[in-house]
Length: 239
Image 1 (cartoon, rainbow, N blue to C red):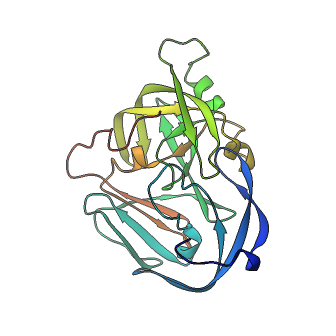
Image 2 (cartoon, helix red, strand yellow):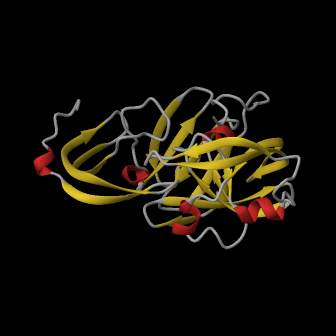
Image 3 (cartoon, one colour):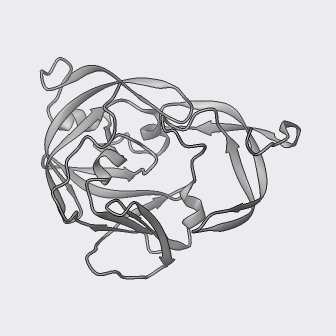
């Protein structure tokens, strides 16, 4: 509504979200800019939900596809730099770029190697059923707490169980404990992450780092440890 977009100039499209698909409309913005990017004739999806956040919209990482983008959680600053930029204090880990600039890296959770989708648009870190099974947490396990759900941009909710797991390693950074939700989200199947232990690495864990950066042309994740011990709980718990 704030953009005063004419729905007659939109086209029907299908939105594939983390918790399901939804029919929606798409438009083209003639000018799309912020302090860190400027785009022309940018396609945009009209969505009724923003994955549980209070934001007016979600910026896709495609706007940074030719650059290095950094999220500094300690300073609350987003910045970009040319690809290949090296900043002291960061360690680098190679990853894999999927379609749509979705970025996957290898992590370790309680000694189990897993593929992790780095998702700064997700409030929570979610493991797939294969991850849950690899950790030996079968249905009825006392370590699993039910009654929660995960919700994506389409507004659909999926039941989730939550557990406190020991030992999460992201690159060279290690956390002794991590709170993980487990849910069979469709996004795991869409991206081929259902064949083996996988995670959606959300902001609840990423924000425990001092900063992260993704160099998209080089397919690299760069992480900087926090200056002080970071604890969970910066984001609301699963409802």
